[in-house]
Length: 67
Image (cartoon, rainbow, N blue to C red; front, side, top):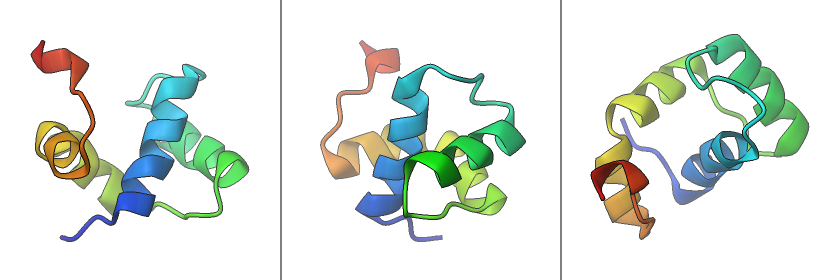
C-alpha cells in the first residue's frame, strides 16, 4: 500500500493533537474528518500504525519511539 505525505501528515495531525487514544480507530477517523481535508480509511490507519517508523523515515519525521 502506498501512503502519501498528505495522508501521513493527516494522521500526524490527529496523533499530535493528543485528543484520542490512537487505537480508537473510529475516533481517529472522526477527528481526521474534522481536522483535515485529507481522508483516511481504516485500512490506511492500520498500515500507518504498523509501518510508523518506516514512514517517519520516508517523510523526515523524528520517530520519538526510537530515541
